[in-house]
Length: 225
Image (cartoon, rainbow, N blue to C red):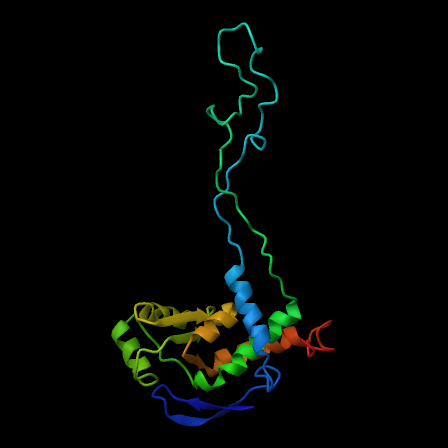
């Protein structure tokens, strides 16, 4: 598949070849929907408290039941005691009820790229920013969008040259900068404009092809899902 290649002023200067195994000719909308659903339902680590039975210690009865004149107590880890358990406290839920096989997640990402190829703009290279300049970043985006569309900029986190670009784009409304190593269907489908340079798209292509055709995944990539 050939995709148009532009310069930083959004003028076409050529094209670039991308494998059909990355931009699928028949993308699966169903898998993309399931993957986005998985991202939305994935549990994150939250605060977790211990109940009376989970707090260490407190096995022995502090004092006998009767005859001391004090209130009866069965454990020093009672929620009424200092250092005891917590009543109705928050509990972390790290397990998601929704799961997808690795091959399904891989095809979902390739399908999302194929579905958003019309909104994808490939440029030869991002301009070098010596220092963070939001004004220059707004001027750069002005060549690619004339409205307030949701924009996703894909860069390589291993390149130091992109650090000032990231700082410059962070303050722009409805513009998100994402490292291609964190590429996911949710951000792709949520964007109305995707900007990426040719070096980054080639790294994405190599990464996807490596995962797709490694041992155990090269026989069939979920064609029946």
